[in-house]
Length: 260
Ligand code: NAD
Image (tube, rainbow, N blue to C red; front, side, top):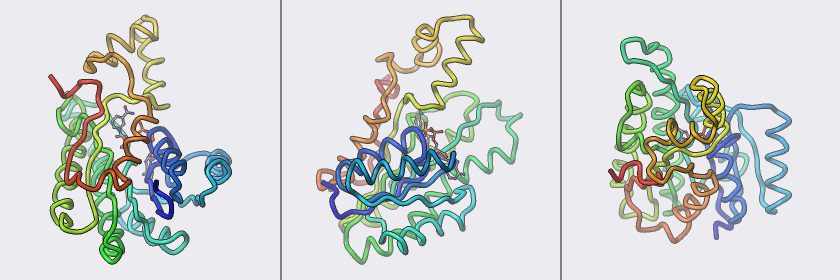
C-alpha cells in the first residue's frame, strides 16, 4: 500500500503518466498531477482521483522544458501537499527525423523534457527524501533507452542518458531508504500511438490491425501493445516496500523488444 505517501508524476495528464497516477491513487497515495491539456478535462481527472480513491490530488502546471520550472514543480508540490515521497519522471515528447535534418531547437527541447528535467526534479526532491530516509525515484525511460532506432537520435540519446542518470543516483543513495530505477516500456497504447496507427493505416492503405502487426509492432515480438495500466501497476510495485531492493535497474516491459 502507498497510504500516506505523496506521489508526484510529471506528464500525468495523458497516457502512461495518467495511468500511473490512477494506479498510485488506487494504492492510497496522494497525487500531484502535471502536464498540459484542456483545463476542464484535467480538473475532472483530478477530482475523479479524489472521488474514486479518497486521496488528495492537486494539479500543478509547469513547462518541464525549462529547468527552473522543473525545480519549482517540486517546491510547489512540497508546499501544497507535502514533500514528494515518490517522484515519477514521465513527461516526454518524440520527434522523428534524420540526424542531419533534426531541428536543433527540437533536439534541445526533447533533451530538456526527457532528460534535463529529471535532474532538476531529482535534485529538488532528494534532500527531503534523505531527511525521511525514504523515497522512490522512478524514471520512465523506454526500450529505446536500451536499444536504438534510426531517426530517433534525440529520443535515443535522452532515454539512454536517463538510464545512466538513474543508475548514478541509485548508487549515491544505495545505503539509504531511497531507490532510483527506470522502467523501459515497449510500445504502449496511448493517445499518441493511437494517432500513429490511424495515420499509418491511411498512408500504407492497410487495415489498422495490419499496421499494428506489421508496421508499428514490427520490433515487438509479442505483437501487442503494452497497456498503460501495466506500467501503472509495476510503478506501484516499485514504489511500495516490494521495490526496496531494486537499485539502479533498467526494467523492460516491452513484449520482447530488447530480448533479441
Ligand atoms: P503522452 O503524449 O500521452 O503523454 C505525455 C505527457 O507529458 C502529457 O501529459 C504531456 O502534457 C506531458 N508533457 C509534454 N511536454 C511537457 C512539458 N514541456 N512540460 C510538462 N509536461 C509535458 O505520451 P505517453 O506515451 O504517455 O509517454 C509518457 C512517457 O513514456 C514519455 O516519457 C515517453 O517517452 C515514454 N514512453 C512511451 C512509450 C509509448 O509507446 N507510448 C513507450 C516507451 C516510453
